Length: 79
Image (cartoon, rainbow, N blue to C red; front, side, top):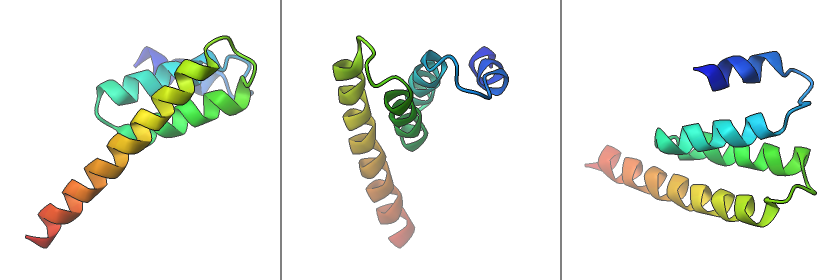
C-alpha cells in the first residue's frame, strides 16, 4: 500500500524507482501484466539506470508469465 501511495504522489515521475517497486509488488501478487507495464514504464523513465539489463529480464519474465496466465484463463473459460 505504501508503494501505491508513493506512486500517487509522484505524478511527474521524478522517482522512476517507484515504477520498478510497483512492478515487483505486482509480480509478487501474480499480476504479471501489471508488473510488465510497470517495468516497461521504469525502463522508459530511466533508460540509463544501472539495472537496465536486469529490469529488461524481469520485463521479459513478466510478459511470458502474463501470456501463460492468459492462455490458462482462456482454456478454463472454454471448459
